[in-house]
Amino acid sequence: MGRTIGIVGTGHFAGYLVQGLMRAESPPDIVVSPRNADKAGELAARFGVGIAADNQAVIDTADVVILATRPALGTTAIDGLTFRPDQIAFTMVAGMTLAAFQSVVAPARAHRAIAHAGVSIGASPVFLYPDAPELHTLFSAWGPVEASPDEAAFEVATVFPVFYAALYRIIEESARWGAAQGLEPA
Image 1 (spheres, one colour):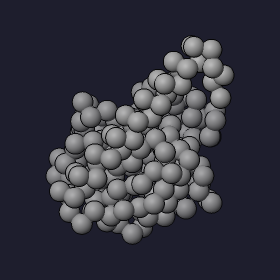
Image 2 (tube, helix red, strand yellow; image 1 turned 180 degrees about the vertical axis):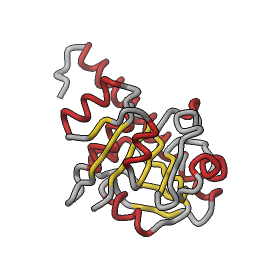
Image 3 (spheres, rainbow, N blue to C red; image 1 turned 30 degrees about the vertical axis):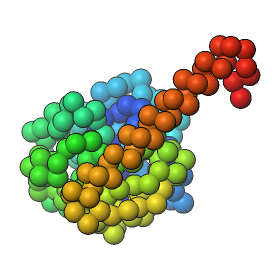
């Protein structure tokens, strides 16, 4: 792949993203933010990702920067940090507009992407806006790429990962209940 991927926001979803990226024929170099030290350490031990000293170090190291924080945090993890014009930055934060993200990552090129936990096994549709053909190769490790023609269509597409997450949660809770009733977890 030849690019270094930086992930700001090292939680469960970042773990899924890394696991999926490692499925690529030529996995990229990956560096993650240190905020969640336990998760960052787990990803380093399991996949050999680098752990940056801070979020600016993630950005300084990466060719492609992924913002994968919780929606309530917005851009706070990257506010005031310096991006380069040769970088591609994309937000996977639900509800964050392209304009809001672009204002923080300029002069980097900004995009929005959304997917669900299935990225870990290459089984999530990946919605992208605006389209960037060079990102299709990166995203293909996560699943089929669907470029949205405009931001309104992208917003509609972002609803689908929420449905998947709700369904997975129902299945998970049902499986726990069944196990508590004496069924074999498998």
